[in-house]
Image (tube, rainbow, N blue to C red; front, side, top):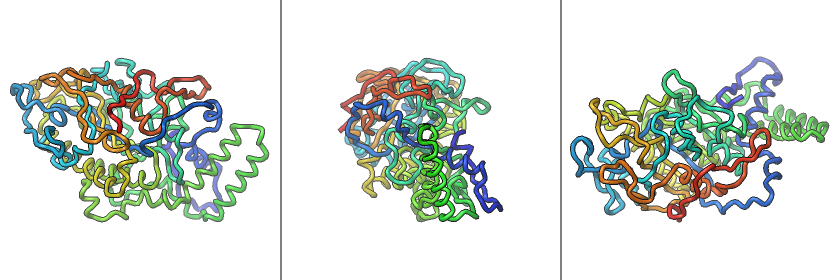
Length: 455
């Protein structure tokens, strides 16, 4: 059972039903670290964490690096595009004119302009490579139980929150591979099991009646009754002490009740506690308010928030046609507002040094503008941005060739980026993790950390 399917409904019954009890137990599995894995990995030495949390903005569909981070204004008309570059707070570096707020923050950012991988067709396979570092070529087929786990699942498993809060949250969509396609891989617990899937918030935070019913106490269940339920779990735990799995389930169910009754959890999801100007600064749209919700969750103690910026792979950043109108009319203004507000909010609250804001895409767009005024998939060279969380501020790492088509220096792969992300978060990228059958896997299959990206 995945988190997106949990439902705590108001009931007229005076007790918790068996179904509700199982749901509480299922919710408790979210982000919990199993003792057997920790015992199996005695002697593992993780690096000292530079960051405690991460907010990952996945610009799902392939954002155009040539019209955002790596513009080529001196190229011919069929390559350079319609947008003008503007100066940034980092001397000598320019970005698109449609990212004016982010331009003022580039002295805080690490921009990698030499990304590349082996997937140029299927968004699903490219997203999977970008999220997990596992580049398996064009293999599609939706999310599979054998997939490598998403970073949020690993982080919440190995570094669970210190506060009673959901560890790993994904919003606002489970992005599909095409409007009628299966869910994309790369966002799930994978071989670690569905118990390590993120908590999916599949509602629009910009909606006036936005709320998370899964985290609302049943109307007729008091805290005293929940305490009694915990005592029952403890008694059951003692009776089955010889059965490790049952003992762990009892602990997880007890933890789930803590989450249900946690003021941190309740307050984190309450966007009404934010002022109108703050909400406006992020943008009154599903993505802007999702970014704001992400900041609130991290502030409350959540380890990882992943925002997938598309209901399906072709819906937003997949600009095969009408690239420039889509970017300047909707995509870039919304992204500029949400991302810049997120960065400034974290900085003002003293959280940016220990929170990594990662902006990724599945690939870039082609240097050549096609006949539909769009750009096509381009995996051979693209850009991404990291801010805070131990990444080096004011660093432009790597470069592309004159047309933005291929890396000219410091070619970098998703495996290297994911390994570096894990390292910043205090997890060894080459450590062993175990699947549901107890079989060992290297955490990031290929790619070592890029030390030059870190402070």
